Image 1 (cartoon, helix red, strand yellow):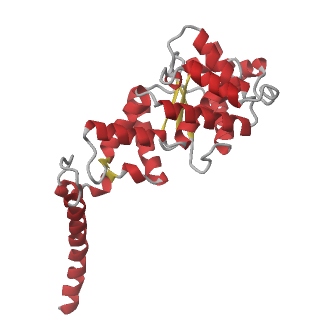
Image 2 (image 1 turned 135 degrees about the horizontal axis):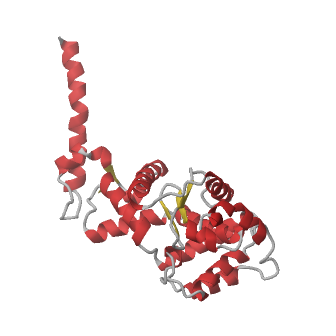
Image 3 (image 1 turned 120 degrees about the horizontal axis):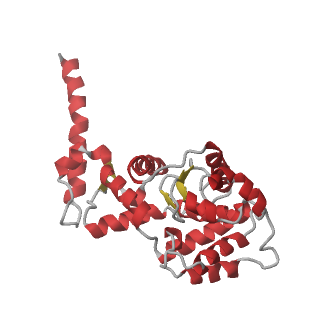
Length: 282
């Protein structure tokens, strides 16, 4: 009888301790307004994410859920296997030379004629078919992908999500609900421009990645200039905050003119051959 009582006492002890800790966190916080009650948080605790200290594993899990919603509801993936392999190869080459090479990256082609690319947390990078068609060579395509990898390496979407959650009043003392985090992530991926500091940092990281991967660094500048001079509506990665010309000028200052065209990826004919299935489907 005594052994049975001891076993049940241990089973009850852990939930009781969890309740005490949860109440201590909530009641000890100076934040007056809470998104969830302490008891809701206790019941849903495994779903609550602390955005200020999100682990790489949590980031990947949320990124995977964001990706599932994006590809099932928001974007249509381009299914040609040759084009997908080609983009994947470029992405792998860049990821291995990035500032954050030890996470799993996923590179996907979106069947959309608009010129755009974007990324979300957990290593997910998306490139529109319109951008592939516009690029003159592999190095230009790689420069955009390197920029998006820079956002992932800098964990910019997590910072944006935290700022957005706080501004919207949906962040509690303990964090934000996982399902809400996924919804915020989808919105950020599709509709929210990055800050001035994040764009400059992604440019800097992207340029560094591009060079390490062996691509000609001039391609990052030439592609931006092409879009700026073309009179097109600027894609997300060239949002006017900060002004594109300021970003171009900063990149030029970081590239040695003597080695600007030194590296791989400038052969236009080779690039056209690599994306021939896409060009044939116009």
